[in-house]
Image (cartoon, rainbow, N blue to C red):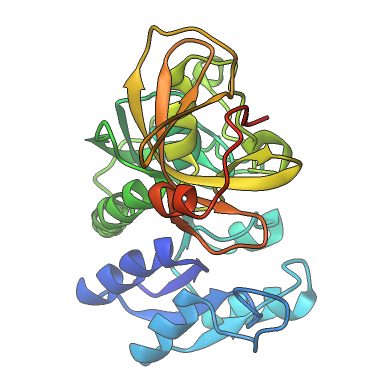
Length: 306
């Protein structure tokens, strides 16, 4: 079974490696073009998938315009029997109908359809999530399910940690899906749209901390956005990123966002309860432990995150 693989970030790399390990031939790997990965001033870098594909000796195609005739011709020329999509972009119908095409999604669909399923599962306090393989159709993340695998979300786990575990689980799901397709021994399950929930793209607006919410919700929000893109708030008009926190209590009430400093520990009042800030980054400064920040900050005793 000749395959075309499409993917870009680190999340897709274990799936690519697992396909090769399972001895399924890949005639072409499609990824995004080289670009600066950290800041606009950096030198262009290849995507993680491109790096992995080159290390495996696979042919790579970088594509910007998914609707270009040249891209469609390249896919047709590869003569795939199937195509595997992991953390790539939304493919036009003209591409995903060239051969049976399935996607790996990091949730138990139909829950958390959208761009950020891992983040929103943690933000919403889920204790279980998983991965789904499904055949592509025009409606995003709504195709018929081939298989699913689940795992428990650890109580203090942050998004990047969960993403790493799901990428490995997803690699197993991709290989198993290919074996099912090869044998023809699978039964598709139609998604129930009525049970669908959304996982929208993360933006500056929806990653700001709302300190009026209960401490557990604030704690889940912070870990759901850690390490990237990171929850944020403001202090004296400057942006403050909160990378790590701990849930301290869930009962105390007071002025939302107010600091409570105890030695080298920084607690913050939420709508109900307290969290402890463990690591942070003030605008224009480097990331540091809260204790280090407090040692260098001249507190007035009236500080409040907004």
